[in-house]
Length: 256
Image 1 (cartoon, rainbow, N blue to C red):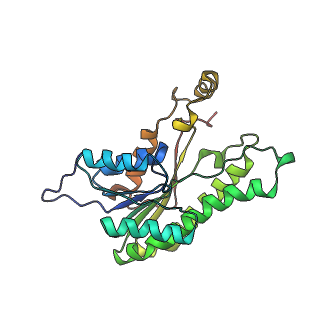
Image 2 (image 1 turned 30 degrees about the horizontal axis):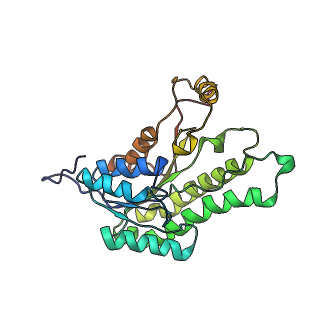
Image 3 (image 1 turned 90 degrees about the horizontal axis):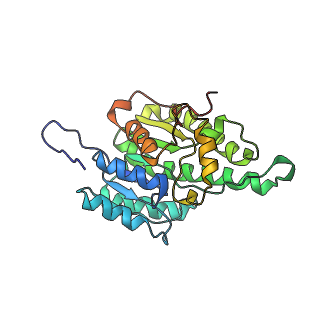
């Protein structure tokens, strides 16, 4: 892990990644740390994986702190951001990656709760987090917000309208907040992964993976590292003139 602070290098701002105890969040936290960011690793207080991510960052020579808490409540978000700022300073990169309800329900059996639960999670959590870190970003005259969306917001998988609708709403927030926060030097973007197998997909039948891969023009399943690399770029100085955009990371799935 490189942490070059020699003359001429530009220090990376501290990053907060939510849902970083495993899966995409863990990969993103590790990748940001490898790029030189000090990282606050969030997950629920009883998450067994978050401490391991912090240990891995530190073992590689990076800086990381635990920032446990529920990112769907005002009190929880205040605790998370306080832990991040107390340990690392003001958050300059925010990656809301914590995931919530993903009901697979056809429209003729869908209830209001089926629709509301993912919508509430995937819009409320980013709202509370952005509001909590924005004062520090404004004081620093800039910052990065990188949402973790889904390519399902642009596809039409049968039975997934509740989740797809929530992710589409999240993209609308990205675009509007990008315009609102541009005068503060804060960029707001999203990555939209396709199906990226992580720990919770461990029991997926091989034939399902093969069927999905057959529809990916690049001929393979994506990895958490693919998504993390896109996040690192959007958090970088090289993406300073990019805002209100969604980078789809799915190997071209959905092009045909």
